[in-house]
Length: 571
Image 1 (cartoon, rainbow, N blue to C red):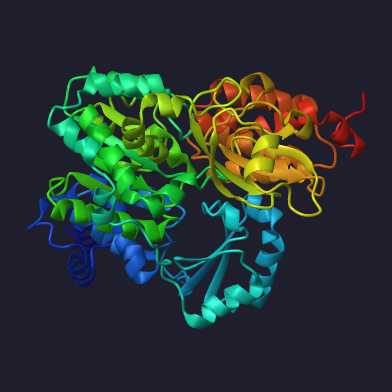
Image 2: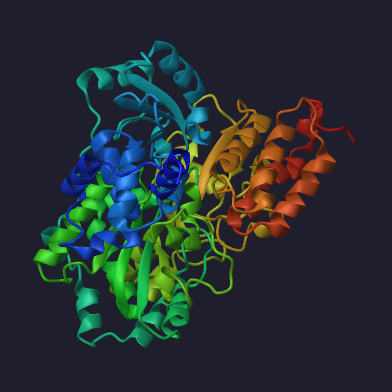
């Protein structure tokens, strides 16, 4: 064999690709633990938690560390890389790229913050920042719309932010989550907490009787779809076990912050409802998927779960808390399941539905935070009490996240079926000074836009569809005569274009196409309508199906205004 042939053989027999660095592997085991001692560390559903550990510790993810993680978890590097690059809160650094600076400022640019001056604030912060030490980024809704504009300095949120308060926060070095004052287990139990869970476990309350209570109360899913809660239980329990229960605490819909409100004040009230739901479907485990924009709540829930375990109310490890990583699409239940399994959060094709094949391929109950929060209260005060709270022929209570041009934004608990005019006058202190009602979003970014002339429609499930809108999570954003509705639509479409998971062409291309059309001096109405129809008919999930709603609303109810600005033809 010639010397050239020998060299070629050696090259072919050598390992291909970049090789694992032993020091990096040792460092990884020191951070995550020894997978030989705890094999569960290798389970795929731990991947996103491991990526968080690396991001939190080092501030970014390097390729050598990702390769070490692939070996650690016995997963293909492609799977590690695909997941890490899918989520906005992971910074993957390649080769000789410069790592991000130690501090990141995230300026919320969702609608409520834009109305409050976030665009000018972003420019001011960008102009004044030293890029070697501070990175300034735009970010989607952070769930604090009542205190807009909001800037995240690391994990600390500056509320009602301005250039001075952000700079002061930087000077103080405040990058950790704000402290949350919450109701501890002892206080919750003193007020009668966990009584329902005890009665369920002891057989004094049956699954069937509790389902009848929830049916009579009219409790429906309060995260958006409004599916009757008792029917979800029945659908999951009809499938053979083992079964799982999952709580969707990833409220990323712009304008929504009610779940954060309840979790910060009464985490045990939520946890009791979640545990009762898990009991109702005989779940093997209860998973809580919390959005990463709520870092202070992660600590609250972790401590509250520890209290339950210490009090022997739950077995250790029954409740599993998981962090999202900055992906609005994970609010869709099947995408949430994919994320819990350690994958990119891309919606699944249905059927089968998650009630049939959900987490780890098993029947899974997925409920919203506020939905389960009401379960112990309905049982304690009676289904009649809850059902009788409605107005204008509706039943129950709704937690409205109200932001925008009102005097008192915030979470307002009001009768289901209340109208916007009533909500503003009775709960929000009227319109903000100097503003006159022009339009409103009844259900966040995807719920459409209604004019002031339709502010007397009952706000509830099944009341807005004939007007091309829906209530969703009851995120109400109020617009005034000082707001540009065309810019509002562009802001909302920009959000959907950024947050599309990219899996299906109608959504991926459609959102970008609509945004491009909206940015023109004159709108091509026929093309907008055509793209909207394709998105509604062919998108895999609700993001693509609902994304055109703001534009369709303007074309339907604000034609004269659009025509006066020469955006569409007169007539």
